Image (cartoon, rainbow, N blue to C red; front, side, top):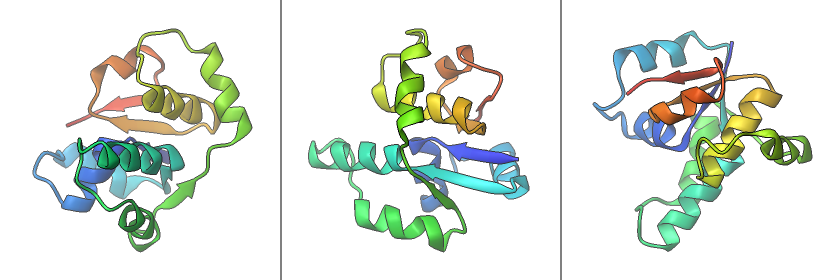
Length: 126
């Protein structure tokens, strides 16, 4: 199974946060491939620049490979797939992650329960 981590889940994994449930940890361990989208790094970089998040985007990039994860670039087909999504969620980064999950396909692991309304591919955990 391919598993795409949303930004919050990726940050929790890197921090070994207690907010990351045992179920989420088990799903990550069981995945054949864990994907980290370029959109995640982009979102973190923007939030860091705005002072909403304290992260080093370059470190987030290097941690992808160190963690044994796979970088998922943003492809034209991913961007185009956003236009077919209903407006359940207005966050552009989350919408792009949904589009990537549907296009690849991959299961999207998130703590945002609103995203479940998009697809059965969305796994919500905390």
